[in-house]
Image (cartoon, helix red, strand yellow):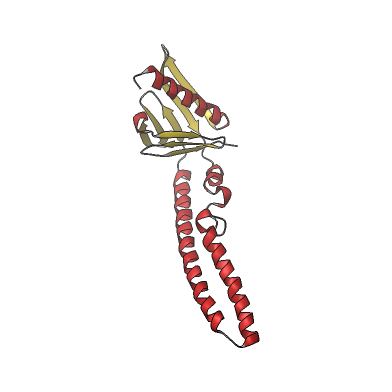
Length: 189
């Protein structure tokens, strides 16, 4: 953080973070001397529901609406209705050739859907395990200074140097800090 331009960018980002977190903090403490930023300390409150809203937004994690699974579910439903129609046709005309052919497609689409559903289930389990682990911590503190950003949870500290942070995405609902370690900080409602 040697040059002034980078330091100004850093301070602007921290100002945006502190403005977003106005309803999220219990204590914000900024110390500075001679226009040099020394430390920012934010006591965070963990609320599982805030994280779940972010992780499961727009149907993500749903076995029907998730973007990963949506097309395979649609194809399975179409194949199922076509097979049902061909079954009715087969009963009326006593010709089961088309129905048998449609069952092959139904089986293929079923396996594709089940594969996608398995991936969604695995992702949901990862999110659940992550949130369960976060819930066990009683203390969550964000600390930033000229050199690094850190998250302290009880006695564990994760430190990320500013030089390792690739980008910061600031939304109305949350902040993503992306680097070697990724930090998600939701806005408390």
